[in-house]
Image (cartoon, rainbow, N blue to C red):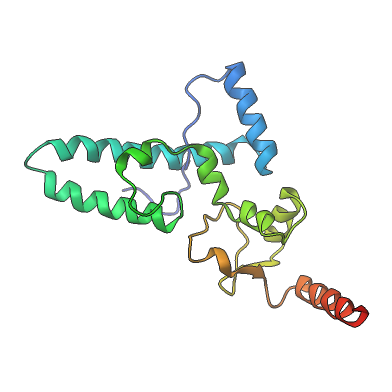
Length: 180
């Protein structure tokens, strides 16, 4: 297993370092989602690779007669987990897992969700609000922009109670109510 305190990479590097087409696509995604660097994009790639690899293994095992029942249970658990993360629709199959894209993972990040819900004006500002501790998920402060938001937590994203942003937003609402 290894020493638990030792850090190790949570991502895989691209197989070839200098491919102009891939690099331009990566730069476009980094800009679109306000990522800090390409490493965050590679982490999303690795998460997606992990689920795709699992889906391919389960598809192969379902054809084998001896391991069919165990594979079915694992398939159901994997699909439920992806459904909770809102990456797949209800009633999806393993083939749908193979059709997922990196953008689907990036859309589930807290940074993207904060921007999409209008709590921040830009992706960069969303990242700043999260890292400075102004954003909470289900009442708990989250300071990790790459936190993957589950479907049930999506409606519970808001400003942290002890944040100065809650005071500013309440003052703006009071001023708007007074003027009419």
